[in-house]
Length: 390
Image 1: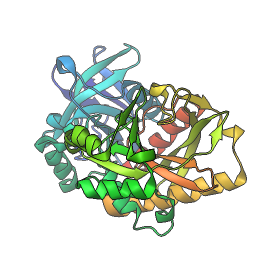
Image 2: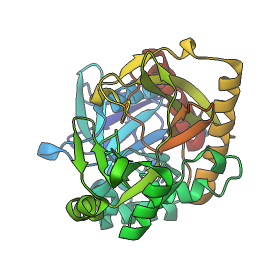
Image 3: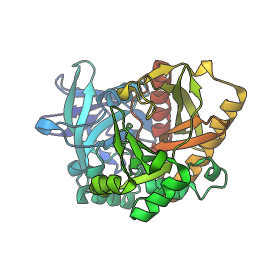
Image 4: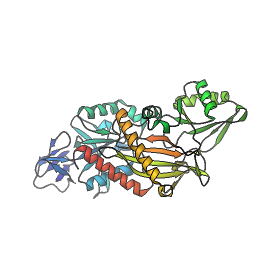
């Protein structure tokens, strides 16, 4: 059905006074819409118009918004194709009966500010961890819970908490490299002695930033390799004295370094994208990232490159990814809330074992176009299903 928005008066209209939003706001009946009003085509279900899909993000500059703009735009277009409406908003834009945010008008090729009824569902795409640690975010989550508005991908995943949760699964626990908190000097030293090579990772890091490989050398000397350079230390004592403050500040964890199988001389990892289909989690696509200049991380911003999954694809791999996606989705949703989307970083060791390195609750855009297209379609179908519209 056709729904219209009068920007000047912040009023919603329709031809028959349909109810709009999860709080069932009555639209004003109109016989002849004004040409200046914004026009949307929505689904109608027993006089209820929708869905309104809220995408929660952070404030940007000049009263705009921050976050993954290309993802927001692709979702907006796909949702509109399915007769729905997405509104980009922040936790400061919520009122008791409405939200204020932005919609993309394709005929104007720009984002336009609107005030709308409460959404039927909210997808959390806040891009900064600090913004999930604010009172306004906590109040927003409580507000959606009180109003029984589905809210998925509840937060960023802290690596320490993530591994704690994943270890509750007997299927996933054997696939996790051993990991410890760095809270005592002797504990880290004993872990390094045991493993000989360990990764140092910030608990709240992302995109491969801040990751180092610490290696025990002969005569108790140490080397610390980053994505750009390597530092040598004459002893663990020297390393600890120079790096303790940084590790404390960024809450570093130590993880056993897996000796990865190489392809053409460099390591590679699998990036598995997964979505919830309303019943279980399933694989949306698999990409491969290979390092080119260092062996610390395979992320594209650090010089990694794409390799087609088909080059390594087997029936075993397909089944393996299917099983771990389903299990991880169940575990995350059981302990941390509904995760409609996540990605997994996994790799193969030289001794033929697969390991799970990371799980990311807010995947960035996949460089493989076919995966990204499928992603937008699955996110749209999930939002429609959870909102009560299909």
